[in-house]
Image (cartoon, rainbow, N blue to C red; front, side):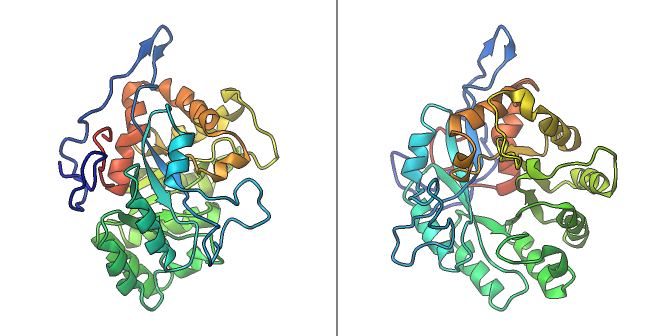
Length: 326
């Protein structure tokens, strides 16, 4: 398999292939309490990179956020995740400035732990195809994020033919669409989008923040429908976030939402994402990971492999850059 750049040698940029995807995978540690995933390689599918020290600053986070307003770069991410089994990460846009797509790609090129980036481009707007062609030349550019973010209205946009046409171009380029800030309206719009562009890979972010009603209704029906669509994936990210201001180190505190998500999407669709460094608002990285790892390990080794790295390959077609990446 050809790598973008290994830790021992530089190589030519190529797209990741599926051949040999399991090469180098470490065996599962099996203890008295059953299969565990501590020694399994992990791909974190949701981190953010930014540097407020730049002359132009950053559109996010705000200056008054004492927790986040400091550089979030690959070397710091490596330090935070040291010894936790993280072998790769996918950067998700946190800026709507066009040239920050290039800034992230330049930063990612310097550290092999970044296996892909998801940028910010606006389908349906002038220049979309030109910008897509420009950034897509870099194999680390794996898709775009679009949804209820930066003042956009996803449900209105999908009614526009040019928007749909541009998303078809995204799919034809073998790139994916991350969505932002799920709510019932966005979920309904995604059902319509998958009808319109059935070959588009879609990743729904932060689904644990979408609270399901006690009784089955249209939202659950739409989620069940999306679970049937072959190219739809979901991140179990922001697990420690709780809008009422409560957090806990006890898995049982979060188990009902995790169970609800697992019951709908299952092992073939769910992926791990930390939302680092935004996750620092609620808990330290090791605690967030351990909560999810404890839950997923109980599902068995095959499900854990899918959750922690196999599904990320199917969703992002990311670039293998180091020997310890599966």
